[in-house]
Image 1 (cartoon, rainbow, N blue to C red):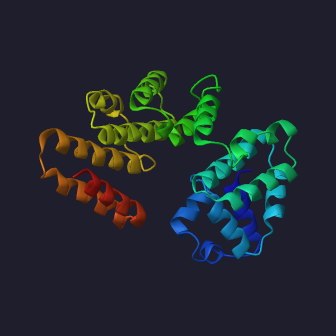
Image 2: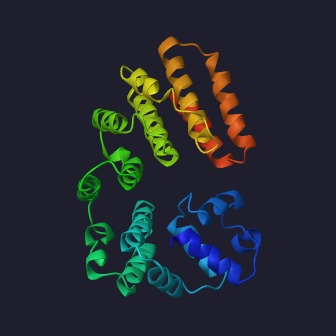
Image 3: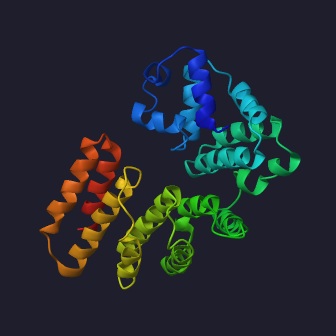
Length: 274
């Protein structure tokens, strides 16, 4: 039982459509992915949805804890929310989630995440803790790839390149669409970091490694993203300003698909880099 599945259960019990259940808190397209456990919901949005629908936050997480047979997955969901609250500096939300975790039916071992829950933890120690946590996982499993993708900014560009090379080596022949999606997301981040550091000597290696990945509906977003950042790099290398129009076409495609906020982020990215 993941958080999206439990939200759907509460919504159906209240006999509400997705639109009525979410109000103006999140978009329907985003929430639909949350219910399908494709996208993760932020702490603020989850608490907002629960309050909007008069659902007890404590009851919700108690049910979540009781219905799930996988304590690791429970902890991961709650931990992600804690980290999200930390980086938005939402101290009150951090204390609320911490209380929920300690009052849940999780084992004492699973509750013992003080290094990630302590709002006084300095960022250097937090960075080290999460980096070590990611690589405590013995191999590049799907869960590990998800963690790494979320925290790539904790590593230098050169470290990210080494890690990503190892990931690509392990999964060079994979047909698992979920793994392919994570790999594309990781390569996309590599392109972004390369642009930010103005270092492009290794970009072609990563682009070549993913060029044979078949485009599917699930992977289309990342394929568009990668083409966008690839064009940005080509502009920087050749001063071919004409490719800006191609980048703008990618942005329009995403905007027409309903991704207004992300489209604005890409526009800002162009503005910041040229």
